[in-house]
Length: 95
Length: 483
Image (cartoon, rainbow over all chains, first blue to last red; front, side, top):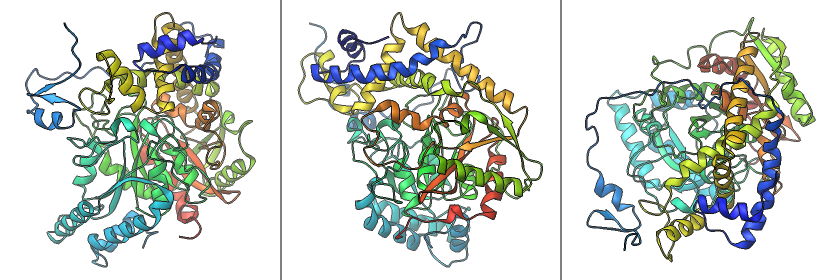
């Protein structure tokens, strides 16, 4: 399997990463080396094996539906790139 | 003083031979002198450290000191520390000051340890050489031209150079054990779920685990006693009875069955490392342990499966860095999507981007089953291999890394070569097992690490076994030349 430039750009778009042409070319070569390593998995017959999604078999812990957090808005917004009147500012998304 | 163990330092503090303020000043002076050369720390805060040491002395005077009270400590810069910068060695978090403490940070502060600084690391813990840090490479105290290992390379270099007696690390695929091996230290990755991940910046959540790094197994046991514990804020934290991880330190090794996986002693292992590990195994046999051959037949698949699972989880975890609520935002952008794309492109370094791209790709439509689900099935086979092996042995031993520390720049342009450095450590993360590395000799004048992997929740036995070895050897007391 090998990734072409178009696939690298498509994946970068999905990942919200801006990439230049030069960067994409370099990245494609490196990703293909890595995928050559990953491809070793395909030789293994795993039919009937239950996928292991986590290190420990855990049931999701539930808690009572009660407010436990106190208000930290000022602390949290102090480290935001841009805020106004208690809101996070981003470029306009709705005309 | 600088080579004393945590219990020796604790005894000196308890006997009034030295105060925490004096001890903290001693290590701060060492940091000021050596850190410009090693770059082991990203942040050091003398004033806060001295404030904490005064508080520790006061606490001792009031009769409330514990075994670790007043002893200086460094945190890997992946742990959120309120009021300190927490960068994860990334431009993305260059100016991030956490509004809260990680659980592990709270626990060690409650034990009275004195935080002196935040250590350098591979960016977002992605790397095995500490060369991907936005804040510059870390040098190995044993030789300035060599890497310290990674990703907890700053913590390892800081302890090896005796700039701090102990530090925290995190281990997703070997990031505590491999740098511990390359710098001649003892480091433990506990069973998944023992230490809370709350406030520990996420890389791959089903694999990430915090653990102690120090000079000896006894030190790691004391640290783990303070670090471990149930925390409701981490949904995968395990609610287990409190354990004393030092309780088996005095246990003799007679009859202990040590499993040697033949796959860990095969092609690709440096001859010098092999010889040092063999000598350590001989020492364990002298102490009454028996060695048995075991097999982990799917070992060779650990690295490929890991480089699907870890990047997949990373691509999801790192999607939170969008330049909106915290972290880097590009200076110039057009619409919202452009703001995301540019902020992330500027904020992340090349290795982090590579892993995000791998992860995004393997999770994307049409590839999920072939890569992600297949990797999860292989993860099961690897965990089952360990279960089968532990039918025949109590602990598994082998090399931590295939070679000693390598030169700076030697593998940084070839990701696959870099990834293969974790060939012996990754399987324990996939299976969720505890693993540790202890110094077991030298090859070409550089430290060699012996890896010990135990069954789930058997940290106390591993630490006890390592301690018995360290009672009869002094590799763990060796210091880099010129200290």
